[in-house]
Amino acid sequence: MKNMRIMLIVILVSMTTITFQFFSSKVPKAHAFSEQTIQRGATGSDVIELQARLQYNGYYNGPIDGVYGWSTYWAVRNYQKRFGLEEVDGLVGQKTKDMLLQSTTFYKDFVYDQINKGRKFTHYGGVPLSIQSAPNEKQIQQARQATEQRRLQQEKKYQAQVNNQTQQRQQQAKEREQEQAQQQAQEREQQEQAQQQARDREQEQAQQQARERDQEQAQQQAREREQAQDQQQAQEREQAQAQQQARERERAQANRETERQQQARRNQNTNQTNNNKQQKDSTAVNLPNGFSQNDIQLMANAVYGESRGEPYIGQVAVAAVILNRVNSPTFPNTVSGVIFEPGAFTAVADGQIWLTPNETAKKAVLDALNGFDPTGNAIYYFNPNTATSSWIWGRPQIKRIGKHIFCK
Image 1 (cartoon, rainbow, N blue to C red):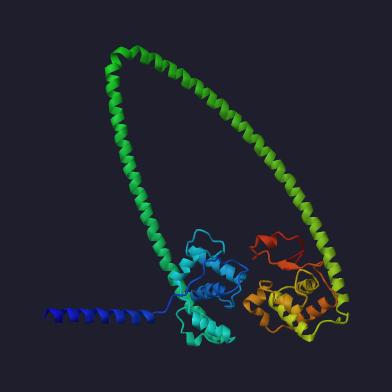
Image 2 (image 1 turned 60 degrees about the vertical axis):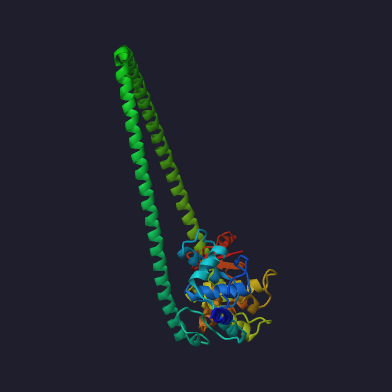
């Protein structure tokens, strides 16, 4: 019987080991980032995983192409801010990676299969992968809406946890303050009792000394009151002088501002007259050689996607910037190279480059090709109402046309 029990134990242990090894071999390994910090301008597998995880929670709606551009940068910042990370800087370090690993899922095989097959795809969480491979616009919109609702619920849950932790910390701080207040009160009471006992013992011997001290203190207080009054009067005089000087500076600044605005209006009227004349002259010039019909069509797409809400001269200005970049040694020397340079144009990043341009955009391109450049050889422009980059704000500004500021 004893040998029988030993054999049964050995068989049971062997079967348990085999079963554990079998199921362990079936568990897929978790995909994770490399140890390198991911930042704007980076490319490769880390960026693909980053974009996929951000899209899983609805923070990134652009293409998963492995290029860390501005769309990915702002998605990272929004994610860092929403989850209360200490540094909201667009740099994907270990804390941001850990939070992404906790809150998202990365279907690596699916993502790379779609990329290798050259398909348009999405990676929204809570949506079957079968409808995210080559989806139509309606499916993409439905996936975004579903993910947005799930993201809001996740943020609400996270905020509730943060609020709960904050309340706990506040409660603990309040309890510590109460304990300290009670301890201080006890110490004051003990100290007052000791002082009272000392005063009682010394009262008979120190009455005369107490009267002298009281008299001296009264005199000292009187002197201090006089000094305080003198200081108060001096401060009032200084404040009156400072206010008078401030009013004089404000009047002088207002006069300068009025003069500057009048001069700006005169300059604007002069520039508008010159620009109208240039626009009329440019439309009669023939299309120069060196540009294909595809170049013209692509430029029209870019102008329409970037500036269709701008006045006509503003659309010509955008086309002129593209041509100035083609002619600049610091940019690609082809129209397609300039337009599709990573991070160069918002319309490329958000897909508006593929909207059908109207005749106004096409005419603006032809005018720019014929030499009409209302920007003064600008190679950059930005919308001051939406631009947050300190770099673009630091570029030397040439002029403002419509909603855009054009820079060197």
